[in-house]
Amino acid sequence: MESRFRTARERRIIDTCKFIYVCIGAFVAPEAARKPHTEDRRVLRSRSTLLAATVRLVSERRSTAIAVTDLADAANVSRQLVYLQFGDRDALLVAAAVDLVQRELVPQLEGGSDAGSSRALAAARHLAQYRPFYRALLTGSCAFAMTRTLNGLFSSFNRHAVRTLFGELDQGTAEDLTTLFTGGMAAVINDWLIDGADPLDPEELTRRLLRLIAVLAGSRPAPRSRAASRSRKRRSARRP
Image 1 (spheres, rainbow, N blue to C red):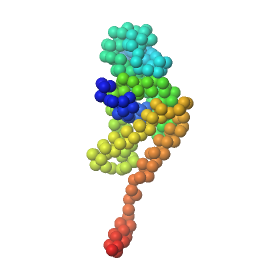
Image 2 (image 1 turned 45 degrees about the vertical axis):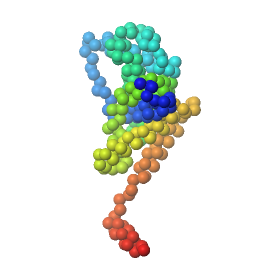
Image 3 (image 1 turned 90 degrees about the vertical axis):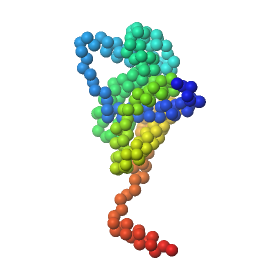
Image 4 (image 1 turned 30 degrees about the vertical axis):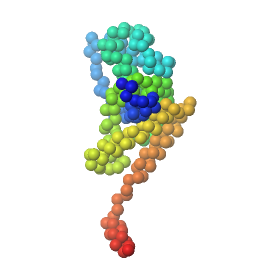
């Protein structure tokens, strides 16, 4: 799969530009919590342990090039459980990222009073705290699979943001703007997370994102009154 891309940077830009938005938008559509049946609890505990161990091991090694056996051993579970629960290593890595966001970030986003600044800052702090893990995933073999899996979590959030910024639009324009908005903002976050100097500054990223949103919001044309429109037409008509 990686052979489709000529360079690591090209793969990173194409495959991961939307991933980071899960950290800001996941609170909009988190997976419904399933009440486990009694017979499922042991399996769910093993799954939870494996997901947490995956985050820990990837963070320590700063790489996703880790054998399934090592991941299983870190959680004290069998390799068979990994394949039974997730199918392959990349699917496990993606699931670990989703689980981390839902455990660590979602509660902070749900408790925020300001959807603009406090939630963006909470997301930036979360990314900075777990930078070794996210950076490894964003530059590793699972980047493409991660984008495909997590992209659905952003659709409603990004469409809502576009409508808030630009008002009612036809469907095609709204979809194109959603793609543009997502890719552009994610590229800023992606570069900050992967290439930013240590230590990362969450406040600085938050200011940058809010400034970009303010510029986009200010780019909307202000509605003209009828009198202003007639005056504009008269001035145009008088021009040679």
